Image 1: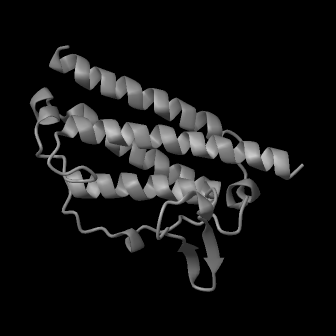
Image 2: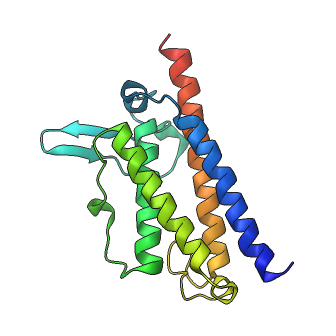
Length: 174
């Protein structure tokens, strides 16, 4: 496989993951996104001072499935962190990444992050894909190919979680 094919395959894969994400975002409404199948599942919660975002102490099954809004926030979290750590100064922390306040604003934020990430993928040379220069988070001491593939996998996983959340909502909120 040539270097050009690796970059091309990563871009193809992220586009495929993005299409699944967009499919599950179609007609998503606020009530559905904020609905929680389980009170113990990860959620974004409206509080007096804004929105609180749950953070798991562990990733055990007993915590229950996350809300769709939390999964959307999680996409914002890892893409913001990946862009900052791999192409910025790495100063952003989890608590610096808020829930945008609505599904529509979250969709806009995710779209902007997607476009920035894809732009970075397109700008990198084949040599940079093999280097560790832009691979600082979430996988240290790996090449950027592994970072890009991890993020593609994360997007696919989160898109599937959103779809599953929509199935749960449609079934339990009849």
